Length: 343
Image (tube, rainbow, N blue to C red; front, side, top):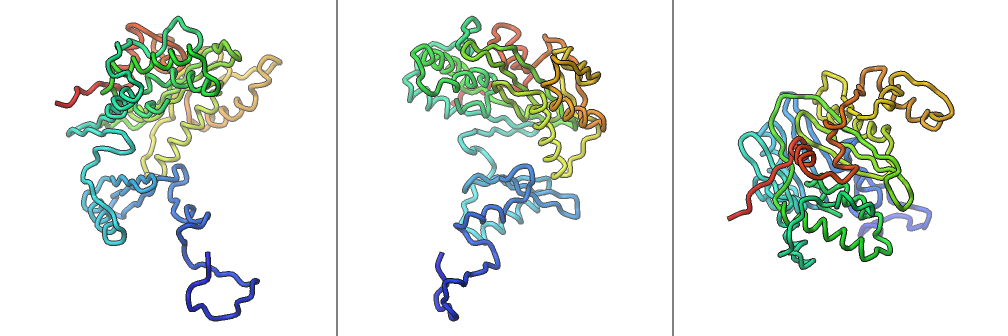
């Protein structure tokens, strides 16, 4: 940065310019635009009439939405007047994600990205696979934004980015073969009046043949719609609760109230009992930090942890290779669907 032209005054090296507003290019500049405390790409405005306008920004791509069409149009007009922007109409594509609308729901998928990926890897004419991972294989990367059913496979494969072997390549090809059969699969969002947050969380025990680390996963629903999912090595239940709290804080900022505690479903009776009736001994001492964190959220009824039968555990698809009817049952309950190929 240099002094403005025609600047008059003492040009001593001890003097600096004090900016009265944000200046593009400075490292502090992005902080001047953050509105949401929970998502730094989210901006919102509440109106006295009860209206809400929301901007979701990624670099130079912007989504504008809200519950008042007039305010949305006013906001769009202001942006056009102040900046050199191009209005593309109703949302159809965003960061490689295709968005399809109907009168009551919305569907997101990445068909074009999958087709391009298959072409780049010369797998356009490969034979489709029924599952992304061989359930009998114990070895066991970007499409998980709209396909949670491959998150477990991607999580495992990403552990071998450094010095991968030939069998890792074949495992990656297996995912491509699976995508070949489901290029239009994505997540369906329905309109509903169910205002509650639910999470299904699951973990296996020392499943990794490399380092014996455990894999855990969770899926989060707002109403009946799937909003977040994750498959990760050795992620504690407390970390899943952190994501629940993030969802709640985001809803609070958007002034969407929750009238009941957020629900967590776990298929491990011992874990559920330990949260409700803590018993400290040498075998559970290492979990005390997480337990106290969870206990603070249980007592004021922020969250509610319940046991669920393993057959109803939707997070199973994020921690192990599942095939057959159980896999299809979970995919259906996650709200995943397949759109027909375009004519």
